[in-house]
Image (cartoon, rainbow, N blue to C red):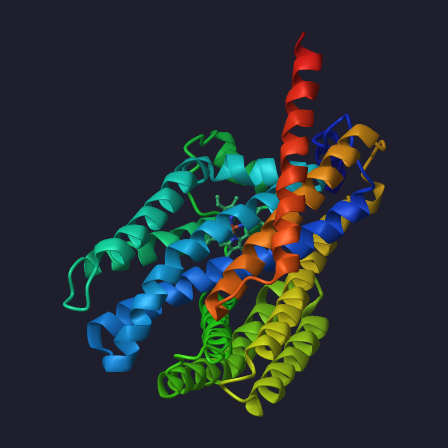
Amino acid sequence: MEMLNTEMLQMMRDPLGAPIHPTIVQVLLVATFVLHIFFVTLAVGASCFALWAFWRGSEWQRRLARVAARLAPNAVGLGVVTGIAPLLFVQTIYDPLWYAANTLAGFWSTLFIFVVMGGYSLAYLFYLKGSPQGKLLWASGLSLALLLLAGWIMHVLANTALYPEYWREWYAPNREPDTRGIIFHAYNLPRVTFLLLVSSVLSLGVTLMLFAWYFRQRDDADREYLTQVGQLGKRLALVAAPLLWVTGMMWAFTQGRQFGLHIIMALVFTLMALLLREGFRNLDPLTGGVRALGIWLLSLLGIGTVREVIRATSVARFNYRVADYPFVWDWASVLVFALTSIVGMSVIAYLALVLYDSGKGEVRPWVEKLGRISIGMLGAWLALFILLGLRLYL
Ligand code: HEM
C-alpha cells in the first residue's frame, strides 16, 4: 500500500517539472504565507473588534471601531492578494497534494471564492453604511462568519493534503465513489484555533500599536486616544501570547505527535511564547508599534516554517521530497517573474511611502522621484508584456 501511495504521489507531479529550483519555491511559499496569514488574521481581528465595539464599546472604542470597520475589507483584500502567491508556489511543488485536497473537498473549494466575495462585500457595506447606532451590524456579523468559513475551508484543504494514505478511502468509502466533495475529511481544532483565532488577536493588537505609533507624529494628534489605542493593542497581544502557547501545545501533541514532531513543536512554541511575552511586556504602547510588528512577523515566520516541516515530514513517508522535484531552469519565466516582482514591489513601495508621507503632511522629493521611476517601469513592463503576447500570437 505504501508503495502504491509513493507511486501515486510521484505520478501526479507535473511532468514538465518546476521552472526553477524547487527549494527556492519552497522558501517563497513559506515567506508569502507569512504575509497571507498576517492579513487574513488581521481581517478577522478587525471584524471582531468592530462588531464588539459597535455593540457595547465605550466612546473611544466606538471611534476606534470605525477605523476597524474600514480596516477589515482592506485587510481581506490584502489577504486575497497575498494568498495568490502561496497558491502559485504550492501548486508548483505540491501539486499532487493541492489538487487531491481540492478534489476531495470539491464542493467547498468551488464555493470558496463566493464565500470570500461575500465576506469582503459585507465588510465593505458595513464600513460604508454601518453606524454606531447598530445599523447594518448584521452585515458585519455575517461577514465575520463568512471569513471564518473561508479560513476553515483553507484549513481543511491544508490538512487533507497531509494524509495521502486516506485519500482513496475518502474518495470511495467502501469502494463507492463519493464525488460530492462535501465532507470535511481532515481537520485539527487546535491548529485552526491557533492559526485563525488566537493569531487574529495578535495581528490586531500589533496593528493597533502601529496605528498609535504612526498617528502620534501628527500635529493634531489626540494623544490620550492614541495612548488608549496603543495600550489596548499591547494588552490584546499580552493576553493572546499564552493562549498561543496553549493551543500550540495542543497542536503539537495531536497532529505533531502523529508525525513525531511534538517535541520540536513544543520547543518552538514555548520559545515563541516567551519571545512574544518578553518582547511586548516592556514596549511603550505609543512608540513600540514597529518593534511589535517585527516580533510578530518573526513569530509568524516560525509558525509558517513549522507548517512546512509538518508537510515535508508527512510526504517524506512516501519518499516525496521537494528537493527531488524535477525541474528545468526556464529562464524566460524566471526573467518575467523577476521583472514583474521588481516593478510590482517598487510601485507598492511608492504607494505605501506616499500614504505614509501624506499622513504626516508632506511627500518627500525622493519618494516622488521613486514614483516617476516605478510608473515608468510599469509602462515599459506593460508594453513588453503586450508586445510579447502579440509576437507569440501573430
Ligand atoms: C482568494 C483568497 C485566498 C487565497 C488564494 C488563499 C490561499 C491560501 C493558500 C494557498 C494557503 C496554503 C498555503 C500552504 O499550504 O502553504 C492558505 C492557507 C490559509 N489561509 Fe488562505 N487564501 C485566501 C483567502 C483566505 C481567507 C479569506 C482566509 C480567512 C479569513 C484564509 C485563511 C487561511 C488559513 C487559516 C490558512 C492556513 C490553514 C492551515 O494551515 O491550517 N485564507 N491560503
